Length: 183
Length: 204
Image (cartoon, rainbow over all chains, first blue to last red; front, side, top):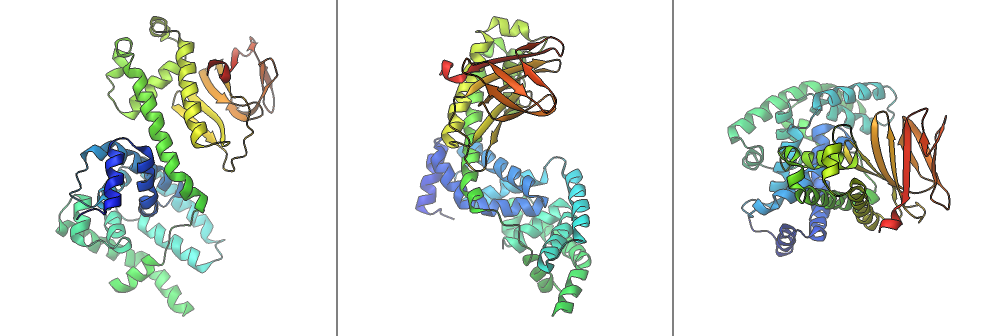
Protein backbone atom coordinates (compact mmCIF):
# COMPACT_ATOMS: atom_id res chain seq x y z
CA UNK A 1 0.00 0.00 0.00
CA UNK A 2 1.32 3.45 -0.93
CA UNK A 3 2.43 5.69 1.92
CA UNK A 4 0.95 9.16 2.23
CA UNK A 5 3.28 11.68 0.58
CA UNK A 6 4.18 13.39 3.81
CA UNK A 7 5.09 10.14 5.51
CA UNK A 8 7.09 8.99 2.51
CA UNK A 9 9.01 12.25 2.62
CA UNK A 10 9.74 11.77 6.33
CA UNK A 11 10.90 8.22 5.71
CA UNK A 12 13.17 9.36 2.89
CA UNK A 13 14.72 12.07 5.05
CA UNK A 14 15.13 9.64 7.93
CA UNK A 15 16.88 7.21 5.60
CA UNK A 16 19.36 10.00 4.91
CA UNK A 17 20.01 10.33 8.65
CA UNK A 18 17.68 13.25 9.42
CA UNK A 19 16.83 12.87 13.10
CA UNK A 20 14.20 15.62 13.05
CA UNK A 21 12.27 13.78 10.35
CA UNK A 22 12.56 10.58 12.33
CA UNK A 23 11.22 12.35 15.42
CA UNK A 24 8.16 13.28 13.39
CA UNK A 25 7.67 9.61 12.48
CA UNK A 26 8.08 8.60 16.11
CA UNK A 27 5.51 11.17 17.13
CA UNK A 28 3.07 9.57 14.72
CA UNK A 29 3.56 5.99 15.83
CA UNK A 30 4.76 6.16 19.44
CA UNK A 31 1.38 5.50 21.05
CA UNK A 32 0.68 2.53 18.81
CA UNK A 33 4.07 0.99 19.63
CA UNK A 34 3.78 1.72 23.34
CA UNK A 35 0.35 0.04 23.46
CA UNK A 36 1.77 -3.04 21.80
CA UNK A 37 4.84 -3.23 24.03
CA UNK A 38 2.76 -2.61 27.16
CA UNK A 39 0.35 -5.39 26.32
CA UNK A 40 3.27 -7.69 25.56
CA UNK A 41 5.13 -6.94 28.80
CA UNK A 42 2.55 -5.62 31.28
CA UNK A 43 5.11 -3.13 32.53
CA UNK A 44 5.26 0.59 31.76
CA UNK A 45 9.03 0.66 32.22
CA UNK A 46 9.60 -2.35 29.98
CA UNK A 47 7.14 -0.96 27.46
CA UNK A 48 9.13 2.27 27.28
CA UNK A 49 12.45 0.44 26.91
CA UNK A 50 11.04 -1.77 24.18
CA UNK A 51 9.45 1.15 22.38
CA UNK A 52 12.80 2.96 22.40
CA UNK A 53 14.54 -0.15 21.13
CA UNK A 54 11.92 -0.53 18.41
CA UNK A 55 12.52 2.96 17.05
CA UNK A 56 16.30 2.66 17.35
CA UNK A 57 16.22 -0.63 15.44
CA UNK A 58 13.87 0.94 12.91
CA UNK A 59 16.20 3.87 12.31
CA UNK A 60 19.17 1.55 11.80
CA UNK A 61 17.24 -0.71 9.44
CA UNK A 62 15.47 2.07 7.61
CA UNK A 63 17.85 1.77 4.67
CA UNK A 64 16.35 -1.65 3.99
CA UNK A 65 12.76 -0.39 4.07
CA UNK A 66 11.50 -0.22 0.49
CA UNK A 67 7.85 0.55 1.15
CA UNK A 68 6.50 -2.87 0.13
CA UNK A 69 4.65 -3.06 3.45
CA UNK A 70 2.94 -0.25 5.34
CA UNK A 71 5.41 1.59 7.55
CA UNK A 72 3.20 0.83 10.55
CA UNK A 73 3.30 -2.91 9.77
CA UNK A 74 7.06 -2.76 9.36
CA UNK A 75 7.38 -1.06 12.75
CA UNK A 76 4.98 -3.55 14.28
CA UNK A 77 7.11 -6.40 13.07
CA UNK A 78 10.19 -4.95 14.76
CA UNK A 79 8.29 -4.30 17.99
CA UNK A 80 6.75 -7.77 18.08
CA UNK A 81 10.09 -9.47 17.46
CA UNK A 82 11.78 -7.42 20.16
CA UNK A 83 8.92 -8.15 22.56
CA UNK A 84 9.15 -11.87 21.91
CA UNK A 85 12.87 -11.79 22.63
CA UNK A 86 12.66 -9.46 25.60
CA UNK A 87 15.28 -10.66 28.03
CA UNK A 88 14.37 -11.66 31.55
CA UNK A 89 10.78 -11.75 30.43
CA UNK A 90 9.76 -14.63 32.59
CA UNK A 91 11.34 -13.22 35.74
CA UNK A 92 9.80 -9.82 35.17
CA UNK A 93 6.39 -11.33 34.51
CA UNK A 94 6.53 -13.35 37.69
CA UNK A 95 7.46 -10.22 39.62
CA UNK A 96 4.61 -8.30 38.00
CA UNK A 97 2.10 -10.99 38.72
CA UNK A 98 3.23 -11.08 42.33
CA UNK A 99 2.91 -7.29 42.58
CA UNK A 100 -0.52 -7.36 41.05
CA UNK A 101 -1.56 -10.09 43.41
CA UNK A 102 -0.68 -7.76 46.26
CA UNK A 103 -2.44 -4.83 44.65
CA UNK A 104 -5.68 -6.70 44.09
CA UNK A 105 -6.61 -6.51 47.74
CA UNK A 106 -6.23 -2.72 47.87
CA UNK A 107 -7.57 -1.94 44.39
CA UNK A 108 -10.64 0.23 44.83
CA UNK A 109 -11.64 1.07 41.27
CA UNK A 110 -13.48 -1.82 39.60
CA UNK A 111 -12.35 -0.89 36.08
CA UNK A 112 -8.71 -0.64 37.15
CA UNK A 113 -9.02 -4.07 38.70
CA UNK A 114 -10.43 -5.42 35.49
CA UNK A 115 -7.59 -3.90 33.44
CA UNK A 116 -5.10 -5.59 35.73
CA UNK A 117 -6.95 -8.88 35.54
CA UNK A 118 -6.94 -8.73 31.75
CA UNK A 119 -3.26 -7.83 31.61
CA UNK A 120 -2.42 -10.60 34.08
CA UNK A 121 -4.33 -13.06 31.92
CA UNK A 122 -2.50 -11.88 28.81
CA UNK A 123 0.82 -12.41 30.56
CA UNK A 124 -0.13 -16.00 31.31
CA UNK A 125 -0.36 -16.76 27.60
CA UNK A 126 2.48 -18.09 25.55
CA UNK A 127 4.17 -14.95 24.12
CA UNK A 128 3.38 -15.91 20.52
CA UNK A 129 -0.26 -16.44 21.40
CA UNK A 130 -0.27 -13.11 23.23
CA UNK A 131 1.18 -11.39 20.17
CA UNK A 132 -1.56 -12.89 18.01
CA UNK A 133 -4.25 -11.59 20.39
CA UNK A 134 -2.68 -8.14 20.62
CA UNK A 135 -2.37 -7.75 16.86
CA UNK A 136 -5.84 -9.00 15.99
CA UNK A 137 -8.04 -8.01 18.93
CA UNK A 138 -6.42 -4.74 19.99
CA UNK A 139 -4.93 -3.51 16.75
CA UNK A 140 -7.62 -4.86 14.45
CA UNK A 141 -5.37 -6.68 12.01
CA UNK A 142 -6.80 -9.57 10.04
CA UNK A 143 -5.16 -12.98 10.17
CA UNK A 144 -3.20 -12.44 6.97
CA UNK A 145 -1.73 -9.16 8.21
CA UNK A 146 -0.92 -10.65 11.60
CA UNK A 147 0.71 -13.63 9.89
CA UNK A 148 3.02 -11.32 7.91
CA UNK A 149 4.09 -9.48 11.04
CA UNK A 150 4.57 -12.64 13.04
CA UNK A 151 6.37 -14.36 10.20
CA UNK A 152 4.11 -17.42 10.16
CA UNK A 153 1.17 -18.81 8.20
CA UNK A 154 -2.43 -17.70 8.59
CA UNK A 155 -3.27 -21.19 9.83
CA UNK A 156 -0.70 -20.81 12.59
CA UNK A 157 -2.20 -17.45 13.57
CA UNK A 158 -5.68 -19.00 13.67
CA UNK A 159 -4.45 -21.84 15.82
CA UNK A 160 -2.64 -19.52 18.23
CA UNK A 161 -5.75 -17.38 18.51
CA UNK A 162 -7.92 -20.39 19.21
CA UNK A 163 -5.55 -21.56 21.96
CA UNK A 164 -5.23 -18.06 23.40
CA UNK A 165 -8.98 -17.42 23.46
CA UNK A 166 -9.67 -20.75 25.09
CA UNK A 167 -7.22 -19.95 27.87
CA UNK A 168 -8.36 -16.33 28.25
CA UNK A 169 -12.01 -17.35 28.57
CA UNK A 170 -11.06 -19.62 31.42
CA UNK A 171 -8.83 -17.03 33.09
CA UNK A 172 -11.33 -14.21 32.72
CA UNK A 173 -14.48 -16.08 33.58
CA UNK A 174 -14.53 -14.39 37.01
CA UNK A 175 -14.29 -10.96 35.41
CA UNK A 176 -17.23 -11.83 33.22
CA UNK A 177 -19.27 -12.88 36.26
CA UNK A 178 -18.35 -9.75 38.17
CA UNK A 179 -19.53 -7.65 35.23
CA UNK A 180 -22.82 -9.52 35.16
CA UNK A 181 -23.13 -8.91 38.90
CA UNK A 182 -22.58 -5.15 38.44
CA UNK A 183 -25.19 -5.02 35.70
CA UNK B 1 -18.32 -16.83 27.21
CA UNK B 2 -18.25 -16.43 23.42
CA UNK B 3 -15.58 -14.66 21.35
CA UNK B 4 -17.47 -11.37 21.20
CA UNK B 5 -17.83 -11.27 24.97
CA UNK B 6 -14.16 -12.07 25.39
CA UNK B 7 -13.18 -9.32 22.93
CA UNK B 8 -15.35 -6.86 24.83
CA UNK B 9 -13.57 -7.67 28.08
CA UNK B 10 -10.13 -7.51 26.46
CA UNK B 11 -10.84 -4.16 24.82
CA UNK B 12 -12.13 -2.66 28.04
CA UNK B 13 -8.62 -2.93 29.50
CA UNK B 14 -6.67 0.14 28.41
CA UNK B 15 -2.95 0.67 29.01
CA UNK B 16 -2.26 3.20 31.78
CA UNK B 17 -2.24 6.79 30.57
CA UNK B 18 1.03 8.69 30.39
CA UNK B 19 1.28 12.46 30.72
CA UNK B 20 1.43 14.62 27.58
CA UNK B 21 4.95 15.65 28.55
CA UNK B 22 6.05 12.04 28.20
CA UNK B 23 4.82 11.89 24.61
CA UNK B 24 6.51 15.18 23.79
CA UNK B 25 9.84 14.01 25.21
CA UNK B 26 9.86 10.45 23.97
CA UNK B 27 10.94 11.15 20.36
CA UNK B 28 13.79 13.31 21.69
CA UNK B 29 14.93 10.52 23.99
CA UNK B 30 15.15 8.16 21.03
CA UNK B 31 17.08 10.56 18.82
CA UNK B 32 19.37 11.48 21.74
CA UNK B 33 20.27 7.80 22.02
CA UNK B 34 20.82 7.63 18.28
CA UNK B 35 23.05 10.73 18.43
CA UNK B 36 25.10 9.16 21.16
CA UNK B 37 25.46 5.84 19.49
CA UNK B 38 26.56 7.50 16.27
CA UNK B 39 29.13 9.57 18.16
CA UNK B 40 30.42 6.60 20.05
CA UNK B 41 30.60 4.33 17.06
CA UNK B 42 32.50 6.96 15.09
CA UNK B 43 35.25 7.24 17.69
CA UNK B 44 36.57 3.67 17.87
CA UNK B 45 36.59 3.54 14.08
CA UNK B 46 39.42 6.09 14.06
CA UNK B 47 41.41 3.91 16.45
CA UNK B 48 41.03 0.63 14.63
CA UNK B 49 44.69 -0.22 14.61
CA UNK B 50 44.90 0.17 18.38
CA UNK B 51 41.82 -1.80 19.31
CA UNK B 52 41.78 -4.79 17.02
CA UNK B 53 40.79 -7.30 19.74
CA UNK B 54 37.86 -5.12 20.74
CA UNK B 55 36.66 -4.50 17.21
CA UNK B 56 36.42 -8.22 16.67
CA UNK B 57 33.32 -8.03 18.82
CA UNK B 58 31.49 -6.52 15.88
CA UNK B 59 29.71 -3.31 15.11
CA UNK B 60 26.82 -3.71 17.49
CA UNK B 61 25.89 -1.20 20.14
CA UNK B 62 27.14 -3.60 22.74
CA UNK B 63 30.57 -3.30 21.21
CA UNK B 64 30.38 0.45 21.22
CA UNK B 65 29.56 0.40 24.93
CA UNK B 66 32.43 -1.96 25.64
CA UNK B 67 34.80 0.31 23.75
CA UNK B 68 33.48 3.32 25.63
CA UNK B 69 34.05 1.54 28.91
CA UNK B 70 37.56 0.76 27.73
CA UNK B 71 38.27 4.37 26.93
CA UNK B 72 36.62 5.83 29.99
CA UNK B 73 37.88 3.49 32.64
CA UNK B 74 41.53 3.03 33.42
CA UNK B 75 41.15 -0.60 34.26
CA UNK B 76 44.21 -2.63 35.24
CA UNK B 77 45.60 -4.46 32.25
CA UNK B 78 44.53 -1.91 29.69
CA UNK B 79 47.21 0.65 30.43
CA UNK B 80 49.49 -0.55 27.64
CA UNK B 81 46.74 0.05 25.07
CA UNK B 82 45.97 3.51 26.38
CA UNK B 83 49.63 4.45 26.43
CA UNK B 84 49.88 3.73 22.76
CA UNK B 85 47.03 6.05 21.75
CA UNK B 86 46.67 9.82 22.19
CA UNK B 87 46.60 10.75 25.89
CA UNK B 88 43.65 9.06 27.54
CA UNK B 89 42.51 12.18 29.32
CA UNK B 90 42.11 14.03 26.02
CA UNK B 91 39.98 11.23 24.66
CA UNK B 92 37.87 11.12 27.79
CA UNK B 93 37.37 14.87 27.83
CA UNK B 94 36.51 14.93 24.18
CA UNK B 95 33.84 12.27 24.60
CA UNK B 96 32.48 13.91 27.74
CA UNK B 97 32.34 17.28 26.01
CA UNK B 98 30.53 15.91 22.98
CA UNK B 99 28.04 13.98 25.09
CA UNK B 100 27.39 17.03 27.24
CA UNK B 101 26.83 19.34 24.28
CA UNK B 102 24.50 16.91 22.58
CA UNK B 103 22.39 16.22 25.64
CA UNK B 104 22.27 19.75 26.96
CA UNK B 105 21.05 20.93 23.56
CA UNK B 106 18.30 18.36 23.56
CA UNK B 107 17.30 18.67 27.21
CA UNK B 108 18.07 22.23 28.31
CA UNK B 109 18.17 22.64 32.09
CA UNK B 110 17.25 19.01 32.60
CA UNK B 111 20.67 17.37 32.65
CA UNK B 112 21.78 16.50 36.17
CA UNK B 113 24.65 14.21 35.30
CA UNK B 114 26.16 11.97 32.67
CA UNK B 115 27.67 8.83 34.14
CA UNK B 116 30.35 6.91 32.29
CA UNK B 117 30.88 3.54 33.88
CA UNK B 118 31.56 0.03 32.70
CA UNK B 119 28.01 -0.24 31.35
CA UNK B 120 28.58 2.71 29.03
CA UNK B 121 27.25 6.26 29.28
CA UNK B 122 23.97 6.98 31.07
CA UNK B 123 22.24 10.27 31.60
CA UNK B 124 20.32 11.49 34.60
CA UNK B 125 17.60 13.98 33.72
CA UNK B 126 15.35 16.12 35.84
CA UNK B 127 11.71 15.81 34.79
CA UNK B 128 11.01 19.47 35.53
CA UNK B 129 13.81 21.22 33.66
CA UNK B 130 14.84 22.98 36.85
CA UNK B 131 18.59 22.30 36.83
CA UNK B 132 20.45 25.54 37.45
CA UNK B 133 22.47 26.89 34.55
CA UNK B 134 25.90 26.27 36.10
CA UNK B 135 29.33 25.47 34.70
CA UNK B 136 29.63 21.75 33.96
CA UNK B 137 32.29 19.75 35.79
CA UNK B 138 34.17 16.71 34.62
CA UNK B 139 34.77 14.32 37.53
CA UNK B 140 36.79 11.16 37.51
CA UNK B 141 36.59 9.04 40.63
CA UNK B 142 38.82 6.01 41.03
CA UNK B 143 38.55 3.54 43.87
CA UNK B 144 39.27 -0.09 44.61
CA UNK B 145 36.46 -1.18 42.26
CA UNK B 146 37.68 0.85 39.27
CA UNK B 147 36.98 4.27 37.86
CA UNK B 148 33.82 6.13 36.99
CA UNK B 149 33.56 9.44 35.18
CA UNK B 150 30.80 12.01 35.41
CA UNK B 151 29.78 15.24 33.82
CA UNK B 152 27.75 17.09 36.40
CA UNK B 153 27.34 20.40 38.23
CA UNK B 154 28.03 21.70 41.69
CA UNK B 155 24.98 21.05 43.85
CA UNK B 156 23.85 17.95 41.95
CA UNK B 157 23.72 14.47 43.41
CA UNK B 158 25.54 11.47 42.02
CA UNK B 159 25.67 7.87 43.14
CA UNK B 160 29.10 6.95 44.42
CA UNK B 161 30.39 4.18 46.67
CA UNK B 162 26.81 3.04 47.26
CA UNK B 163 25.73 6.45 48.54
CA UNK B 164 23.95 9.45 47.11
CA UNK B 165 26.57 12.19 47.24
CA UNK B 166 26.26 15.88 46.66
CA UNK B 167 28.91 17.40 44.44
CA UNK B 168 30.27 20.67 45.82
CA UNK B 169 32.78 22.79 43.94
CA UNK B 170 34.48 25.98 45.06
CA UNK B 171 35.56 28.91 42.92
CA UNK B 172 39.01 27.38 42.40
CA UNK B 173 37.55 24.21 40.96
CA UNK B 174 38.24 22.07 44.03
CA UNK B 175 35.54 19.44 44.40
CA UNK B 176 34.31 17.46 47.35
CA UNK B 177 31.69 14.74 47.48
CA UNK B 178 29.41 14.86 50.47
CA UNK B 179 27.71 11.58 51.28
CA UNK B 180 25.41 10.72 54.15
CA UNK B 181 28.25 9.25 56.17
CA UNK B 182 31.46 10.51 54.64
CA UNK B 183 33.10 13.32 52.71
CA UNK B 184 35.64 12.66 49.95
CA UNK B 185 38.07 15.17 48.56
CA UNK B 186 41.19 14.84 46.38
CA UNK B 187 43.14 11.72 47.20
CA UNK B 188 42.04 9.76 50.23
CA UNK B 189 44.77 7.21 50.91
CA UNK B 190 42.84 5.46 53.68
CA UNK B 191 39.97 4.48 51.37
CA UNK B 192 42.07 4.33 48.19
CA UNK B 193 39.76 6.83 46.50
CA UNK B 194 41.08 9.46 44.12
CA UNK B 195 38.95 12.29 42.78
CA UNK B 196 39.98 14.36 39.78
CA UNK B 197 37.85 17.32 38.80
CA UNK B 198 38.07 19.87 36.04
CA UNK B 199 35.63 22.41 34.71
CA UNK B 200 34.33 21.08 31.43
CA UNK B 201 34.31 24.64 30.08
CA UNK B 202 38.09 24.64 30.16
CA UNK B 203 38.18 22.07 27.43
CA UNK B 204 35.28 23.31 25.33
